Length: 113
Image (cartoon, rainbow, N blue to C red; front, side, top):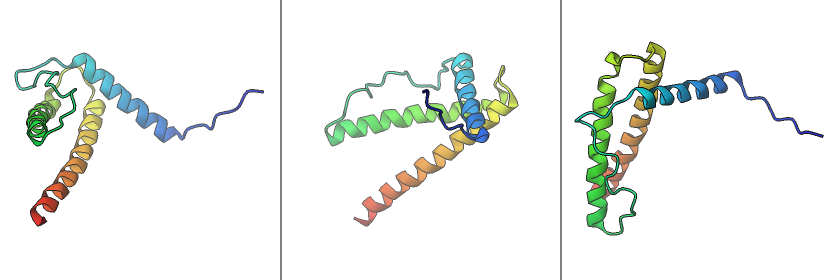
C-alpha cells in the first residue's frame, strides 16, 4: 500500500517556486561584469593558518562586493519581471542583515577580548 505524503502549505510551495524562478532567471540572464570577481579564487581549499584565512577573507570580500554592485543595478535589469527582482532584493537584503549581525558579534567579541 503506497504511503501518502503530507501536502505542503500553498504559501511555502509558492515561495519555494518563486525563489527557484529568481535563481533560474538570474542564472540565465546574468553576464559577468568587470566588477565581478572570477569564480575560482582558491576558495575551494581549506585555509589552515591565520594568514591563509585572511587571504580567503579578502577574496570573499571582493566577491561580496561584486554581488553588492550587481544588486545595486537590479532595478534596470532587462528581461526579468518586477516580481522576480523584488523577491531577489528581499532575499538578498534579509541574508545580508543576518550576515552583518553575525560578523558584528565576532568583531565585538574580539574587541572585548
